[in-house]
Image (cartoon, rainbow, N blue to C red; front, side, top):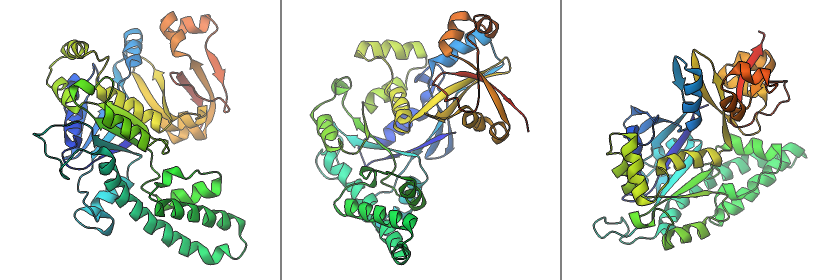
Length: 366
């Protein structure tokens, strides 16, 4: 399953710089390619050092990392919810994403003029939130009207959906995003999914800081953290200027030396992708053979048949069993046969819940 993240933000906050850093990803990690689908859409592989370890042992014909699709969403102006500017396209693009990366300017620089004349990440956040909340409010009010008559008939399922929509309406009218309203049952989950609300999507607030604040943040970042505390959102601190400088290096080794000089352990875009995974409760399992070593993305809590279904739906339908090795055991013992001989190859059935890093072979019949 490919994860699709949309980058949003006001002009001159560093949104395009971040996207350009991703597009020049040859220096971001040892195995971190990027390709452009459209001018504002790219596909980037997920950095995972475990793949390199598996490749060294298995020596496959090819290695296939898992991927993330990044969309640089442009066109927001005040009134976007009414279709002003590129509003309709902007909102449609967000609707198609799994998660939102909201870039906020958290640095001072007199040479980069802010669209509103001063640096205030909370104000910037509220501008975009306001447009998305108003669009969601339209959607929720329309749904309430559709459910109103049926809810009076005594249908419990519809009644629960109706009550949930009223909670959403109250939150949105109070200037809160839909993600702040807890989903407590399947009825609420069903109606939320049907409405495809914009502000119910998980969001990662990316605080774009100056070089001196890249390691520990600054006062702007602290304000952002306080402002989003109730949203169940991730907050990530990145200096896009630093990321831009990293992208200029031709080799992985040069990049590592540059980061070391700044006192940073790794490139911010690596942390960005891992944070996106955490945000969506995703994890990785592997298949490993001489033809291919490959990483697969699944939700945390997925069962073995569900994991198999990511490879092909027939694998899930005809699932018989899974042969499972733990990544640590495989790295330590250096071969599949050695893992088997040590009694650490487990045979698991349909109820097995996959763990991050599992190396799996599936047996199925269709």
